[in-house]
Length: 376
Image 1 (cartoon, rainbow, N blue to C red):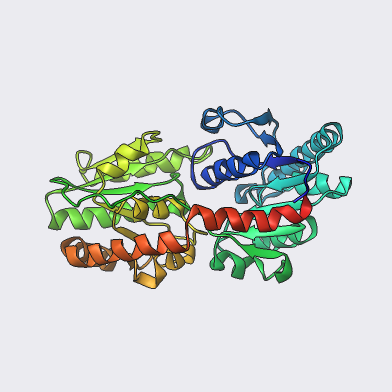
Image 2 (image 1 turned 45 degrees about the vertical axis):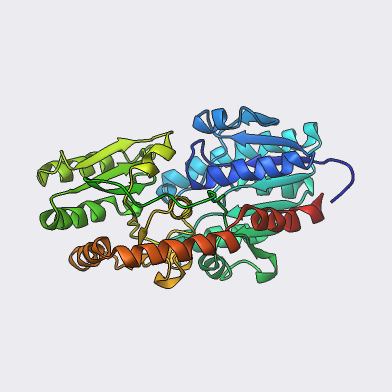
């Protein structure tokens, strides 16, 4: 790292407190502590602002032309092209006026930062939290663009590395696992009835909430003490999916046992009331931070057998992996797991050890420095 503090511009595609945003908070804290001048451009105001209020970060707001799958139509691509063109102009001026040394895009769906960096001849790091579900047009387009725009690409799991290496030079790719801090000791397993299943994450079709409700209905016929709590709000544009989820709960007559709480800032209280965390995504996730956080709280976890879930749960050694879109089989496996306290405790102990050795903050910080420092 240069002896002189540098100026780093971070770009982020949302303003929330979910996985990638929580990693961004860690990144800013790390590089701010190293004395660098940090700039951040967000697409709009939101909860992340408050979380960053104690950090020395210069925050600006601009529509960055975030590219998502829903824009894969003629009208959508024209819309994004216009937004990205305007964002590139804004960022190019910003890079010049603020004399930025490095552009760090904390998501692959913000292309404008990489384009602006290329126009200014600056290094561009992409932190890839995404794992597209297919190898079709969208994935190919994104992969080829990232190959051209990125100087280095951080991937959050081997599953993500495998996907992006189809288009991105493997020499550019560097795997850096997300990290969580561990408590001094695991909490005691003394929760009382009702038995609470919890799912945490954005409400969207890919996250499998309808599949989870289908499973829960089967489980609740077997166990009268089960409750399901779903924590998370909905992406703009997916409000109809949230309504269909609520209608599904109503049609099953389970309004008093399945609760949609929306976004919750008091996650410590949510984890404290949770007996089992379920991550039911029906398409691959990169490396769900919520699984790391639940395991750090000594909570047994269940996840669908996809993508980074398999990696995090060490192929079932640290939690239960269930099939996708087979609610009867999944529910039977979850029920057996609920009733096997010895297996749960063994998984908790193994996951705690794995978090301490592989997913710890010190290792994360060392890996980030190794990627960033050569460009500062």
